[in-house]
Amino acid sequence: MNRNIVVKTIAAALSAFTAISVPSAALAAYVPNRAATLGMSAGIDLVTADADFGDGMEGWEVSGGKADASDGEIRITASGEASLTTGIGGSLYKSASGSDVLSWDFESDEDIADGVNLIGESDVGRWTSARASNPYYTETQAAVEPYNIQYKEEGGKESVVINWQDGVTELLPPDGSERCLTVFNPKNKEWTDYMGIRVKLSDSMLKVGETYTLSFWMMENSHRRSIYCGRTPYAENELSVNTDSLMKNGVLNYNDWTHNLVAEKTVKQWTKYSAVFTPSAEEFNDEGYTTLWIITTGKHTPGSKEKLDNRNNIYKYEKFYFDNISIERETPKAKITEYHFGAKVKGESGKKITAKLEIDGTDKIFEATKTIAKTDEWESLTADFSVSGDIPYLSGDSKGSCFAADDPRVKLSVSADGGFAADDIHIIESIVGDIGKYAGRSILLIAEVVGFEDTEDATAVCKIGDKKVFEEPTSLLKGVNALSFEGEIPMNAEGLMTFDMTYGGESIFDRENIVTMFSRNGANVYPSIEALKSFGAGRYLAEFDVAGGAAGDKATISIGGASEEAEVFAGGIGIAEIYLSEEDIEKLADTDEITVICGKSVGNITLKKVGNDRK
Image (tube, rainbow, N blue to C red; front, side, top):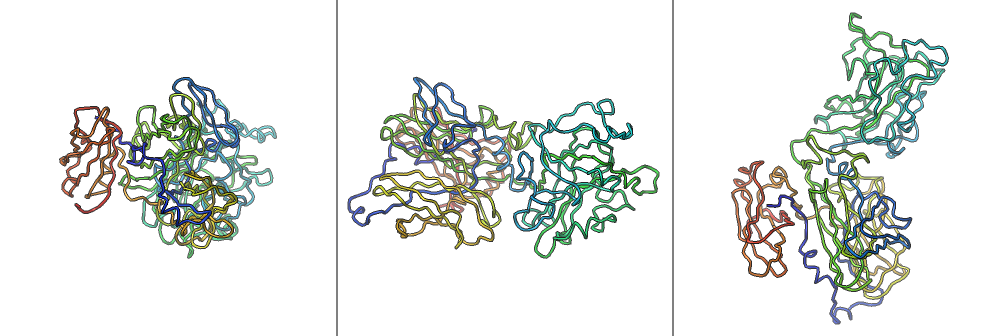
């Protein structure tokens, strides 16, 4: 039994029928420069390698052949099996581990604000300093100072200098990290009372009444101090109002050292800290924004009448290092994330080109095959699939992370027996729900468009309501065109997302096309009983491949206590519809498996929910 549940749509399986045929009567209804869309999808791209090969093939590896990337495509020459691969483990983890997880790895400056004052929408979700006088920046882990070098050089006391003999057993950054966030106390700010960082978050990021776990790695270069974390209603003037020496915002309470305490004393090396909190309505302003602070100050000394001692002892040149910060909401259900894979491929007529995504070389997420219809003409290779947030790579002892070190664990590959060419290789996460909350995010739209004649000087336009996501010049060839466009979701965008192509100021479609693929009807259940339970009772469509199968072969699909006869078609394509009642769902156990019983080998099982009623 193959427990890998792999998306392989009927359209992808029936690759022999991919050629487009338009009756002459239908063509007569079209005037010059007309086209029709065959399918669209839009969302956030997971492929971080060079996907369009406009600047080479950075991020890709080739095995079994030689590659040449130029003129916006990659061509592979080979006499046998050849493949093109890239790792996407970090981006898959960050995407599928949950929209309920906020994370910052500081591998680029995109995770920090441009200034210390968090003004405007563009600063939401970006970290900055807790004091205007403390500079902050990202730097490489190699530049991290294990002790206060400048302070020591100016005659600072040895007792407050961290060195390798003073409790530091090893100085290792978090796994996979190359850069971190640094906060610095200048020489003229010696004897200040606290340092730290803060971030502005919205009520769509932190839900009132929900429970969250804040996790972060931290190290300092001078002294063992206490760490505190708290939230205050966001205010544009919060640095002057909320962070004076008395800490009026309440993050620090010098009379109660346990208030908002994360750790009483820091350890003199990279260490992971965490705190559990539940936001309250009082922590947000009228516009729905809160500020989360991570602050260090003088340590608490036992016997000091429950007050903080040495509050004003942060030395000049002290540095505090932060990395891999995350905020995760507790959620009992597995999150289901939907994706669309798309690529342009070409080769000799009859050649089969296969794309697949695998975890650790064994756990297959999807596999799709395209049989080339016409020699040396671009054709589309696509697949839709979903991932459940409770699969081993996303949870459990062997789970990955959102950092580059885990990229090779999840590999996307495009392969064929012999040479082939590829371009525009993307895996995009479909955005579900309110599009406006993704304002400022870069998204990719990919579309298959059939042109009824060659059309140059066309323009592709994507809008949300009346606000443009992109407007780009493009061209169409007669036949099927695989197109991709990148844009940014505008601020305060409301309404439906639409896609249009114009020529001479007029649409070449019959109408604007609504991008409905943000939320597809029917998500693949990948391989999780918990995910199946989250979909609940209803009708499910199962698809599978039968090795050497032929029309008339018998097969039966079983899910828990429910079973149904399946039909096998020519080419070994099996299809069955099975209804699961509320009682069937309730009785499912973690040990249950989705099985297909057949006299021949079965693989590439796909299961999708397609309706709530029985028929």
